[in-house]
Image (tube, protein in one colour):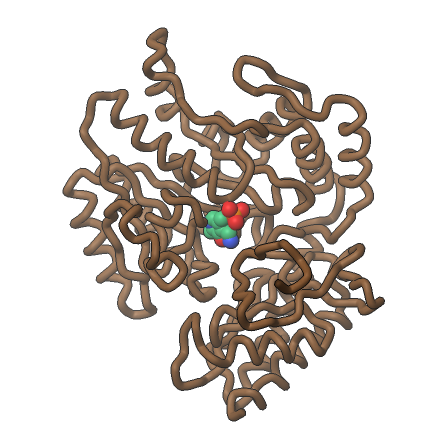
Length: 423
Ligand code: PMP
């Protein structure tokens, strides 16, 4: 017994690493029970976009909690959900083309909006009487930790024990620079065999190691899918809400997917809420007087009104505050940081995509279970920074309000951490 009954996620309790207790947070700062201020350089698992405890979001949550806290969403509706859905359709329409994704299905996490996307895709083909079932995925992908989401993600240490539960997928190689043709060829081959859908993280494979690829590759993959009628599912759970420099990563490639997954920053990172947006064709294949064609997916908290109120406030912030300017400024500072870090011996591939900076420490035994990871984690913790490397890959994905000084501290710490490489 450790004194707490809590079993934490992605935490090996047997290693007895400290688990700080956080009492409150503001902007890019977390405050622990012993009074330490910690810079949240990864937006508390990539969710916090405008900063913790944004006053408009906090006020919207408080007001909604006193008005309508929860409502069954099968056959009932409420204004916050209507406002979010309409706002999203408009915002996504502006980014990807008007009318591209006119329908919004609510759920509550990144994993569940991916499950919904997969079910929509298979439902689409099934209701049309076409036997397409195979899902295509990209090597090194991550789409969540529920069974379907794990099935379409990279197989590795985090899901090896559950392999018997996972379904078979077609894996397309990651488009290494110079080897993009191999990706296109594999995709083309799988598409020809009447795949149902290709699910992809646009521009950045996040949990797979912050692997970037350029917009023209995404555009070409989308073209191949469209040529064979294979549905394109864009998982923008991480890349959405400005992380890559634009509201959606797909924008940069001029790609409108058939299905779009959004979560994390949907509420500014304050409440669990997710959406899966669908094209007219996907909605129409389920639309019928036949009850057997109903989209059978729900959970108790689907479109929870308090979470939707937080999302409404987030959409208003995007409309009314200079969010895009903040993103551009952060992207500029990150690019300058990466240029500095690229000069540091022991660091490879210092790179940025919009507001995200990533780098690899040069070690033997690289990879997710690199022994460097726990030492890096401890080093950053002691420096008052929440930076949680993926193996020997470290990254910064801060809230857009992070100060120049705090960001500079993060860049400095990333540079200083090379001393651990030799240790
Ligand atoms: N898709 C992507 C691309 C993600 O990065 C994540 C989470 N990091 C998920 C899905 C799963 O989201 P959640 O943790 O909210 O279930």
